[in-house]
Length: 232
Image 1 (cartoon, rainbow, N blue to C red):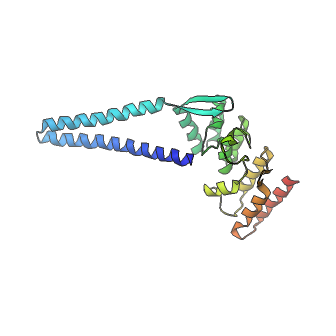
Image 2 (image 1 turned 90 degrees about the vertical axis):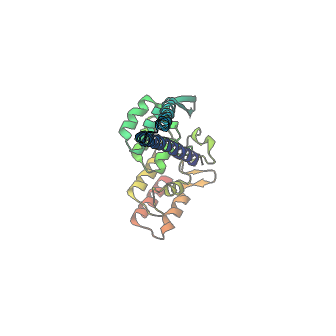
Image 3 (image 1 turned 60 degrees about the vertical axis):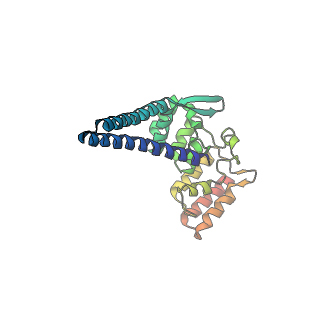
């Protein structure tokens, strides 16, 4: 729900920004048209309106560029420049884990920045099957099943409903196991992700997910075999 709220606010601001620029352009063009027809007073009013639109747009952009966001961390809240958050999101969107590595050396607390809903960088990278970004997050202190991250969630484990969320976000297809899926699960478990918990059993969830497409492929079998290995 938090993600949807942020998305809606972003869309609204984008629409307002666009309308402001369009309005400024319309007033400017209309001003020149009236000026050609010797309606100087109307033209001046339109030029002023165009300038006011541009002024409001400029002031708003300056304000938002200097605005700070709050990042909750285990040691307290940290105020972060919007430009830092923008840079962080850019590296995620472009899957630039090398630059993210250098970025986190400077801003290690950004591993707690909510990328999606309340998920930090590590869990978001888990659901998006991004092992390189997971490695980067772990290197800079992120851990699976982080009590701080999950203190505001209704569940306590990184792998709980992994199949559901990864599929919901379009990163996997029902029952279709790939090398990327196998590597992601292996990375999470090998780096401390719990596979069982209160009302949670990753093994059972995996077996149900594998059979969702009605086919048990060789990759499915490989995943299940690895699951048995970790279980033992």
